[in-house]
Length: 173
Image (cartoon, rainbow, N blue to C red; front, top):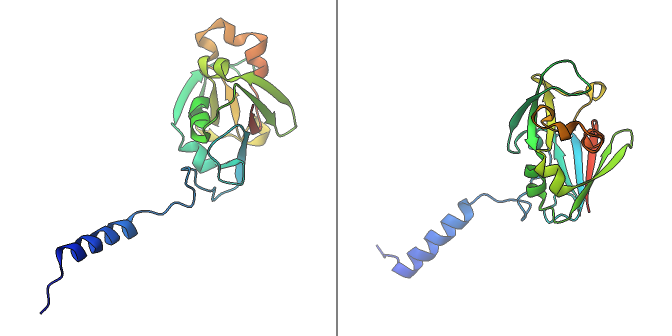
């Protein structure tokens, strides 16, 4: 019986470790969506999964730093429960480097917001409303909201205009 040299054993061990590591199709850490795409992020971003864009399905978005905001809104009655994620988590995930974001809705309504103001005010992307996935006819599938009850400036014109529902895309500028 012939014994393997220590050098050959080390090489075999290194190869075994390497081939057992998970392989990612995307070097930047963004996986490709497996479900229907509901949000596309483009512009000044460093992490993509679809050419020069980042596409997200519902499951990917629900996994982004999940959180809850309970607040009243000018468009609903009483305090509502919104589940989703801070807009900052999405901006970090795509490696956003711009200073503003242009948000566009399904009906092509669009608004441009300074990223510092959006993040600083607690901008939040709601994906569920009172425990239910948001549907298009109910301001879904995504709605940018703010914790309106925490600061009166959040009910001013800028923030109300930035509260875009039926969100379909973000362009980082």
